[in-house]
Length: 117
Image 1: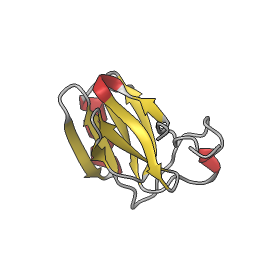
Image 2: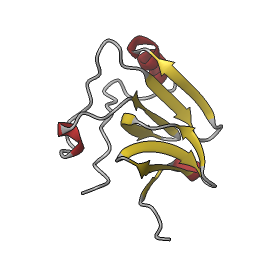
Image 3: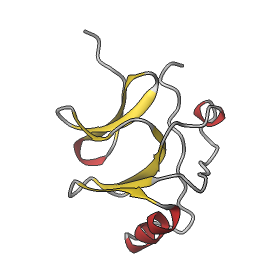
Image 4: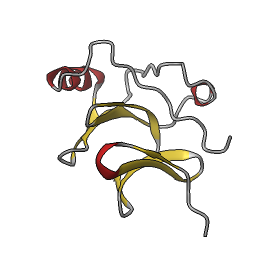
């Protein structure tokens, strides 16, 4: 069985695509930590932060377009050093928590590139 492509994240976590070109985050060994779909993400030190939901089609082809969520977008923050996951955050709570964690004020997230290209 061929190995699936993955994107390596800090501390034994991976972004992978199990099916339907939708990304999820797994821990070494295969345990799903943030289920698909992940609309966008970025890494800051040991933190993986992003948005939940399907990625906008245009941004999956162009990696330089930052993600802009809507009023209903939900966000997550995964501390890969501790394994602590904060999920289903609204934009205000997400930004406040990122600030507490020391992320830069211009922190932006990007949609994963399509796994099928």
